[in-house]
Image (cartoon, rainbow, N blue to C red):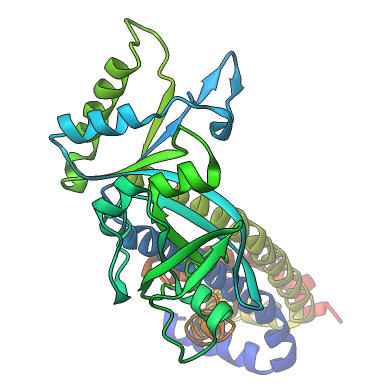
Length: 406
């Protein structure tokens, strides 16, 4: 009997038990669809996070006070006071691989205008901060270096601040708001960025001269951090080395003394987030893959039942010349057909859900092509693996005993 005839016999056997065959496929369909959806959501989330971080500049560098670890204990940057105005001035005077620099001081609290109020965070920065973080002024202008020298009570605000305090269609330029009882005149409004992947409203922000926040609001003489941008992403490592040398000299750190500051690049953060998302995706895929294992066991169970039901048929075929290898191959083909058919349906369901359903519920999704190929190969493997034992059982039947079987 040739392969074509074996396929015809296998199709006939599967078609004669439609419901049983479909239920056997159902586990494969659910398993493959779940794996593809998990991969798609994981890949989509990773791409979304990388895209969002890229909007802040892939050449972004952040200097925070305090070492990563000290005495085996991670230090709290907010309690450290190692970044001072002298550090900012030294970086500005000696930078070669860095373009823009902005010291940063932050404070959270209530912002008020008339009878309206909302909670927000104020960032004390230099004008270069907008270029570093890719902010765009939609209305008005940014504060100036002169405002920094005078610690002027001026600010640039995000769209959420405008909406919460002034309402729709109101021009806030020139109006005064109060942050912790300190009046601030609005000189500019930022173009909206919306929510990020962590659910944070990026437009709920106030940016003011760092001297204003340091002297009038936070009452401190040190920075929370210093943000910079390297000339290019490729020169980020050189910029980190340059900044490290400047700060070590400024802080009089000799020899192998531990840095009292930490420098992180945006590329490093992107890599960390990608690794984290890969781990989460792997866990989800492994969990979904267990359904494929259960589905494979279900196929093996159905094929064993099929061998028992068709014992007499097998005996008759052996009696007219079919060899054990042919009988074994027939049942193996049936198992693979059930598995692969279920897999193809599962791939269709998984891709459709990833492309249409996931975006509809607000989840980022991107189906990697390799996940489809892998899913197909896994289905073939499951068909062969879990069809082998029933196929061998059928091939080893004694023809005489099989014909006499009732």
